[in-house]
Length: 550
Image (cartoon, rainbow, N blue to C red):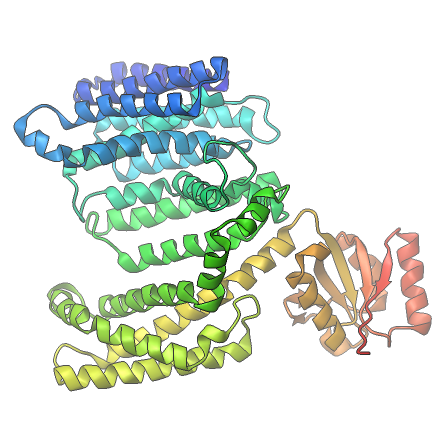
């Protein structure tokens, strides 16, 4: 019944507001959008009651999308020119509808993501959408906010397919209005629209690609969505939902930067950085098995598995392609930071002309530096030398070739310095991303035991690193204790040192410790006896770390 409540509240609020505010302009527009949304709502009701086939729902959404696009494009000859992308618009409408239907897989997820998207559409694209569409979006946002009170974990009310398809249809319709009003061009709001709808599009694309690679049916439900894999990492359902809320907020924020800065001027570095983050998150989550790991095993056994393995680990083609994007974006960002206005337009010509040279020099230098032989999972301080060497050699080669070809015309030393700094930061950030995601997953996992490590020496540091790297242990090191007072109140490998034996009982309570591990054989005798006495009294198990070479 939640979907019925959402649709009814949205429609009632809109008509009441429209009557009070006298919103009678663009009647055909908002009437078409509301009619398409209610039509998808009816399809959802039929699906909830009669269990329609996926094909029936797809055909219905395409048919409704076709009538909506016809209404948006109009029948005038000039308007007919805008229908060149009619098929894409119809497929887009159906795709967004089903994306929200697929996203409704966890309490509060679809409603919260839709609330964020509706708010960004109304705020950022209000001038193009018009007052009636803004009121309709605000009405939807209000209905979703009321629904979330009952749908937050653990939910007491659910939206069903009628609710998810209604929400998807209304947001899909709202996303098409700016495109048909401004035309399809680089300066149009197409990219902001995609950014605002990042979460449903990313989740749907992620699921469809992995199911296709694993040889599974795209229409068969499963626990292999982004939210499910976050829970598989150890996050609670609440945390997984909040992470996707944050992803949607960041996407809307990036769209806001584009819209509010010179009206839809593409801010390529920011958009590209966000896209790289999404790709890295997708790659990382693709390596996480779903709850029963059947999808993961199917992917490993699929006919695509050898190709994917070669692509990722033997040819390193994925890393090279990523670095091509990073080199291009950083080089462009350096020009944007150095020049403004007319100077920027003039020097961008040299950017385009010299880009192939820069790409060739820097890719060759990164390869020669040995960067592509470094593992992302273990990337650390010693690997920074390869990054520094590759970026430095690539920059010197680029400067030499550019100065030889252009004789200092159209180039700038500051651009190459900025480019080198940005590229080094970008490469390091991408390489350490997997370690950072492992760290976040290990520290935030609800299934991990909170561990106190007694002894912050070499063995203690080694133990903490292994706990974070080995997810199978389900152990989260949260605090060190050490008898060396010089280490107190310091952080070692990201874990705080909080006193010695005298503070054990306090630390067990303060940090909600589940287990104590002695990291060295030197911790014995009366010290070990005292530790075990305190832990026995507080019902905390004590174990010892052993490492031997035989």
